[in-house]
Image (cartoon, rainbow, N blue to C red; front, side, top):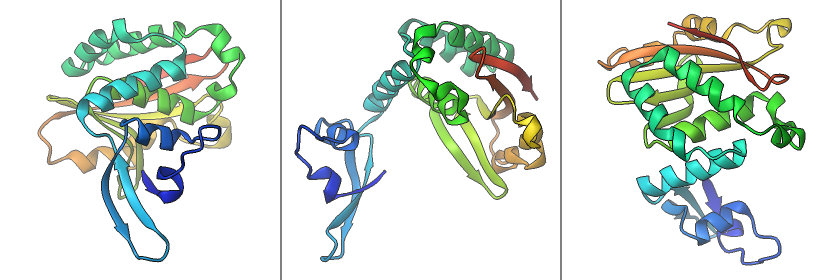
Length: 210
């Protein structure tokens, strides 16, 4: 995150920004900074260490889902670390089914692809793996890349209704844009996953892997 003194030096408790709060409480720290002497300083913020990154993403994922994830993280860890494609499908299906209905009734975010991406990112990042959101390639951006010791998971997400808009199926997009080519030189096995979410059922509509 790129920030400046308008955020970091704000001390108004009545109108404090989330970024300011995270910086002042130590959840974010300055990674690098610069100043031209005219416009003030600009700095890059990031997590101070791996432990904070894991704990903060756990908090984010629970805030996005309204559900406690602590008991399920070890299961997800084992699934990703062993390349269990169907196990991941079942685990996520169960996880989404566990999100309280009242949470969605008060929140319209489920109809947006970015909500599902954010939830998946935070949940998996809470395990401590290297997780890249919108992983840039020469032909586009992978929605989510997850690197474990033995596997590289390449995940693409869509929300139901995209077909009527002429958009490609998520797994087709991974193949046609050659997203896996970025990691050809990496000896780890690649797993490609295409997921379509249904905002009405608030769960996975279709799941395809390769």
